[in-house]
Image 1 (cartoon, rainbow, N blue to C red):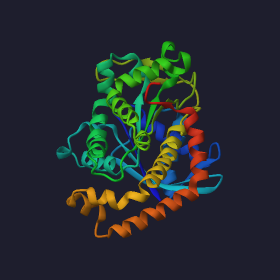
Image 2: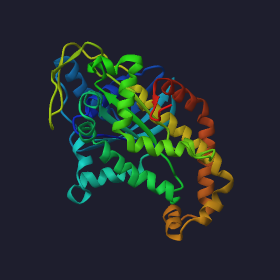
Image 3: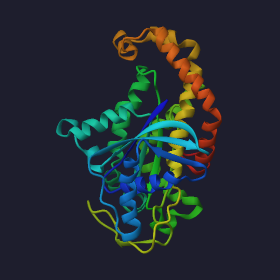
Image 4: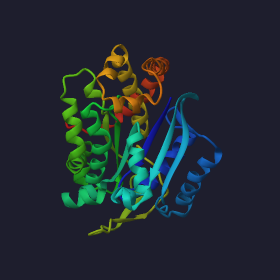
Length: 343
């Protein structure tokens, strides 16, 4: 099977630098995991700006437009899954679809995604008033997108592929004020839940459902990350208004926690799919019969219910074969990620 992972967030949140660090680390491998690009040029396009960042100590230019690349995730050199990685510039999230083709494509990507990685500036979350942090991280826009394309359809029962895995990456953790670092970043986690409360509240409501499956449809975790490492960056200007803080690089980058959100997204999405397929195996036809005919036609796309059932059985069998590898991914990532839902 092939997954689709979309990385997005507001302008200046650290998406580009995070992506470069992640793909650099995963290209050669870390904790037994690595990724292979569909072709060598895809890797080179990411590795070149990372090289310039490391050697010249200059922050990389922001992502322009939309990028989509095909990769394979491997564990101990054994393939786990293929995935499409989609990366956006920050401005796309704040523009109506009738004003931008890129914004329209982002909406379509969110709708099709199995997992999303949201990138948010931890320094902004920690140091700006709450309402400013919400605007600068685009948290309200992010909730609006997820609510429109993932949450509403699930509640309405129109989508047999319900749910989505959500990973929140809190960048620039190395420059946080001390009060947000103590007790394993508890202050940062509490503040982030406030800033992203729309997503948090929805997922928390789903976890409260009595269905055996419902609580697992929206795996959601967050983690503070650093691209440069402790002591290798300092605040040059704290920023105000629309201007975000700027930082000086004082040493070569030493990425921290960068790969865990990615492994969390992939592993929990594979796990979520396996659980969902297992639960629905015996009642797929009954579910189809309850659907509106127009919705059913969109799902079937010219196939019969029997053909869809056979396809999903094949996927379920494949996921069963992958079970040990899925456990390998999730066991690594879940130890590090903090639940988006307060305990």
